[in-house]
Length: 325
Ligand code: GLU
Image (tube, rainbow, N blue to C red; front, side, top):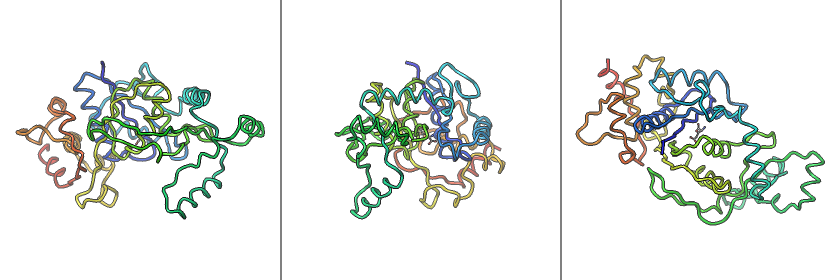
C-alpha cells in the first residue's frame, strides 16, 4: 500500500513552528516510505483565510526544505487541493448523510443556542447541543425550509464508545455521549473543518493522519463521520504539544514562533530543519543530534516519537545554527 499523508494548513496567518514540525514529520514519513505528501489548503474559515497567507506559507515551507507531490501549486489526480474549490463535493456528501438520516437540519438561531449554553453554565455542566431540531417532524422541516428559515446541518452522534489505536498515544477511547450533535455545514453553506477534512481525507486516499494533539478532541467526531459514510478511517498519529522552556505553550511571549520570523532572523533552513525534526522525536541511541536531511529521513520512526510535550529550547537551536554555519 502506498503511504499517502497530507499537511493541511489553514491560511489564516503565519505558519507556527508547531505546524512546521507537523509538516516535517509528515514529510519524513512520506519520503522514507516512498509515499506521497499532499498539500491541502483548509480555507473554509472565510473571514480569516487569505490567499497572501497561503502564498507565504508555501514559499516559507519550500525555503525550509520541504516539497510535496500534490497540492494547489503542483496539481495531482485528487484535486482541487484548496477546500474553497471543493464546495460542491462537500454538498454532495452532506446530502448523502441527510438523506440517510445521519444528519438533520437545525434551525436554531444563535440566540437560542446562547440560551442553551448559558443554561449549561448555570447548571455547571459541559455544554452539548440539546438535539431539539432532531425531533422536528418532516412537515415542520418542510414548512421552515419553504418559509426560507436558515438552517445548518448537524451530524447525528450515536451513543456508545469511539475508539482508535493511535500510533503515538496507543488506544484512545471517547464516550460519544459527551460530544453532542455537531454542525457539519453552516447556514451559509460552508462546511466546518471536521467534515471537510474527513471528506477530503477519504477522497484523497490518505492512509495516515499525522497532526498535533490539539486535534485529539476532533478525532472521535471525525471517526463518527467515517463510520456514517461507510469509509475506512486512516491511521492516526497525534504529535505532542510544543512548549517554551518555561513549560508554557509556545507563543509570541517566547519570541519568534513562526517560520517566517525565523527565516527573517537569518536562521539557516538546515539547522531549523534538524532542530524541529527533534521536537518530540529522537534518533536511536548512539546517534549525534546533528543530522542532515537524508539521515533524518533514514532514521525517522514512529516508535521514537514521544507522547510527552516537546520543549522548544532556543539555546539549542542557536547552538545548532552555529554548528551548521
Ligand atoms: N487545518 C487544520 C490545522 O491547521 C488541519 C488539521 C489536520 O491536520 O487535520 O490545524
